[in-house]
Each structure stands twice: as structure tokens, then as C-alpha cells.
Length: 146
Image (tube, rainbow, N blue to C red; front, side, top):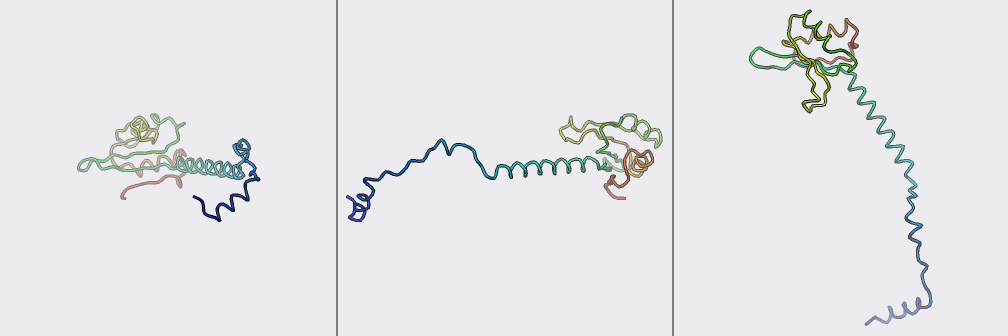
């Protein structure tokens, strides 16, 4: 059944028993790289938080074409501490346009509250935000054609 070489090798090991490994000692989670993984995870979380803050600081002013010559201007990314309804009231009076505050989180878009104004009001909104020191000019991005 076994070849001669296998039988001779088995006879050498007959009187000797291999030491068994203690499996309980192996179950301890002594990962030598665990500390490095935690540090990397902390650094990644901090970088994500910083990126989110940097994106949150930028105000986006966009124009969207409706039908024909009609368009709406949307303002996204304003500070949540600001009273958007009061800001909207002032803008509507100054620029003779209608507008509303839309809660885009309720629509599932995760954009926070967004100002919507009738017409192409991009330049007016930019000027208003800078003049009233609501947001720095370098953190305002105007989208769309000029």
C-alpha cells in the first residue's frame, strides 16, 4: 500500500510526537499593524471632514433654463446659521423678482436649503453676498454662461 520510501520515513517519526500548537494563544488579536490602521483611519476621517468643510464653504450660484426665455437662479451652500427667508425678502425687494427657499434635503438631494429666484440673478446675488459680507468673494462660484 505505501512505497518503501514512505514506510521508512514513517518509521522514523513513530516514536516522536510533534508538539501541538496552542490554538487559544493564536486567538488573541495581536495585530502588529493595528495601531497603523487606526492612525490611517483617523487621518482619512480628518481629511474627509476637512474636504466636506471646504466644499460646504463654497457657495454655488447657478442658472437653470425653464421654458423659452424663462430661467431660475439657485443659490446653494449658504451658511445654515443665516436666516434665508430674511435674505430672500431683501433680495426680492432690491431686484424686483420673486423667489423661494427650497429644502433640498426633503427631496433627497442632500444639498441643504437652496434659494430659488426668478430670472438670471447671478450677478445680483454675487454682489449682494459680497456687499453685505455674508460670504467672501473668493468662495463664491458662479456657474453657467455669462
